[in-house]
Image (cartoon, rainbow, N blue to C red):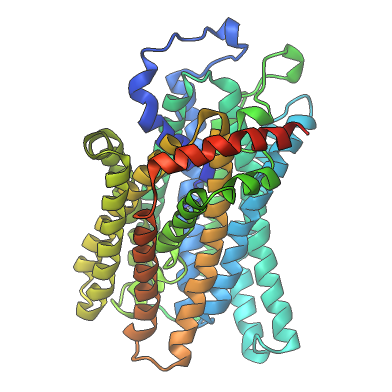
Length: 497
């Protein structure tokens, strides 16, 4: 299952919103005139959130279905599928560049919407091409195995395709999030980000449900000649709906630059401090390195099964394409509830570090249950485990990020947010590559089919999550703050030099 495209900095914004919303009412509200920002009404925020809902639905359909079809129906190697999907995540490294371009180079007098629309046209166009591409490549690999020169050209094409899709998503979402910053004051932003992310989760659930209903006709179908036209027609309808709703969501949401309304700058967002300076801060002390090592292992522990989970449901539990697509809805709903429960109840009661430890323990337990459910191979048990896994992931993510925000000084919060985004993008990309590679390794080792290769992936993921928990136990909050404070002057000096 592919956790849909939530930009890393937005995840942090959501967590920061839950962490600080109880303080917002005590702060004086900045007027629109004083801030120079036009503001977002509730209706406008929900309309703008339609764009995120479209991204959530398309992520379920595009990544979730293609994962399953490539590995199970088309029998492509897991390493090839995971490796190519990793390029989609690694493309997120271009987000700061896209943000700076939208700041500096307006199109038709607007800094945000033209880039949002160009990116949307790009990822929708590539989504429409995805189905014929994977079926043609499957035929190509039958004639030319991936390890040959001709087959290597097909591998490169698949990697470039997913990389291009990731770049298009980044091109659309980076100016989109900058537009949210443009249109809100600091006090309004937590509500706006929370509502927009809620719309993303709604899109995930609706996309999963819609896919499960629309593709019921493919239940039990294995013939590529039957699969391709049905999937192509379905993807075409989805692309048209996404294009239409994206236009409705963003139409007239940005005023021309000539009107003089204040836009967010680089300093308002997560790319405020360069990567070199951020790396200097991370390696400035053992405690900082320990905590960010925890973040990397934690992310791998959540997403190592990304490229293989739908195929796990198909090959071990005998689920159809429509049924495995519904797993995303169970995960998304559980994650949303977990984020809210942790932010409203668990973190305030237990504290951030104990809550983070509890969340990591729950993630390890959920992965063990996910592995054991394959022994029984009963679909209802898998559905329950997916909800529990989503709840655990939401609780652990909220607690870990709240802890990070609590540990860092306000002067370097933007740096840590940016580095978390980089760590998540790299970890999720590595997770896809390693997850698919482990599946191929299990098949090469002739582990008992069908469970053995999938069990290897999930067992390694549970081990990584356990290692993250051990690393978290070494975090000393007082020492972390002291180290960060000592490093601050050096970081700021590098930034202005």
